Image 1: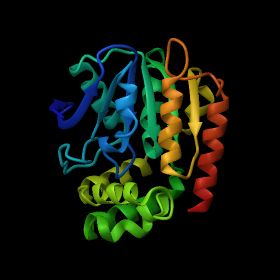
Image 2 (image 1 turned 90 degrees about the horizontal axis):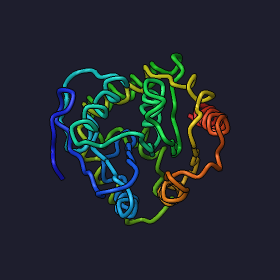
Image 3 (image 1 turned 90 degrees about the vertical axis):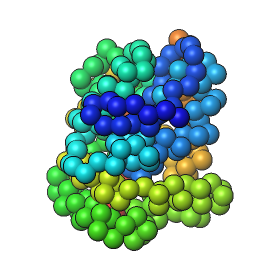
Image 4 (image 1 turned 30 degrees about the horizontal axis):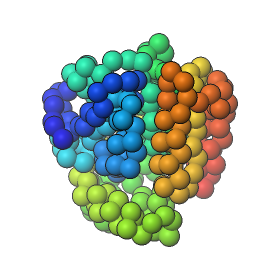
Length: 255
């Protein structure tokens, strides 16, 4: 699992597969490239698959400065160029990473072949930014373990899924740098890509499952199937936008 300097930051990444369409797996806040351990190997048999620890996450560089969603997108652009991963890209994202794929789509619509948005958080209303800033400040001050009740315990309850999978994920989550994690929360609080949802014209799927295993399995199936590209067209242009918008609204109401 090599490292590379891209966009001024050291990123830990895995590029697997030697042929086929380019698939990009973007992990969630608090996640790492290992969030895709059960998905990436099967995809790599017939596709080129890129996954990486985003800045401040996993074992990528522990940044000590604010960053934005645009900077995260620029990280991907620089990394894809450095490892010679050609467009068009099939993005598979979890939660807040949806904002990055949507921003890339806004910038380079001709370079996006498909979107698979798992439990998407496509944007934050400005009125909620202060709440995310509070969560960020708490995590940065008190550490990852102290922030569990307001982060992981809400998004991934222990009762869901396989106990061993949960403990593995929880261990990686606690291993994150709390400062980088906090910057990620602050970046999300200043990002709103909801305006892009009605503009999606590529093949798209929204996987709004509460159980992580279901999200993993369904995202893998979505990317694996389909002629000439990894996504089936069972979520037509516009349908994915409506589904993501509705799901995002329901999640906002529940918090």
